Image (tube, rainbow, N blue to C red; front, side, top):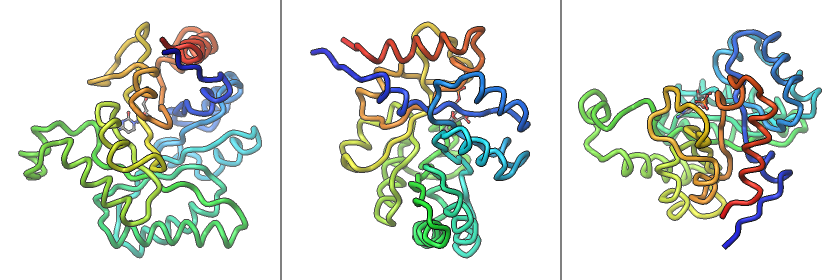
Length: 246
Ligand code: C5P
């Protein structure tokens, strides 16, 4: 069977992180890689620039994943989500371990914030478990008596029950989450490496094609593109590899 993914479609599904500390460096990346449609703003850049970077991205007509990984009490989460909901962004992350009440407050607050500003609300995406946590740490440091895949699934299901739109997960977990949570649940996968690039500090990687085949909606791919000697070529290679996957 031949999977044909149009390059337009593919480019919408690859999210490139702006893992830089300043507005100037972020602008240089965005302007240098005009083909990228979807950018991720993480904690480092958002702490540095605040919403300014979001304005820059909107000026360039880019889609935005605001990866703040919120984690707090329901009232504080609701306040942050109301503001984030007003930004006109596409995806926003919150830790599932914030708990049921905070997750519910978050879903209501992004809708309220977006409605008050007349923008589309972002999809609210749960962080089930940081991929930097190993099974050993889960058991011995966090004292959680579940196997890692089982725990991740439980967190994703709780988030779904509380009205969240999706989850961030490692590519190893995506097939199981897709099967259990259904087609409408948005699955975002970091830990992606083309066969020709360095693995860096990611532990168990999938190629872009493997992750899409396993059921991912969006792939977060950073250093294989941004740290490449030729980022434009790296981007093109990834898109080309996804256009025709045997
Ligand atoms: O450069 P690389 O492709 O490893 O970048 C992956 C991006 O995804 C980084 O911004 C990293 O913080 C983020 N991320 C991750 N693992 C998670 C959640 C986010 O690698 N579980």
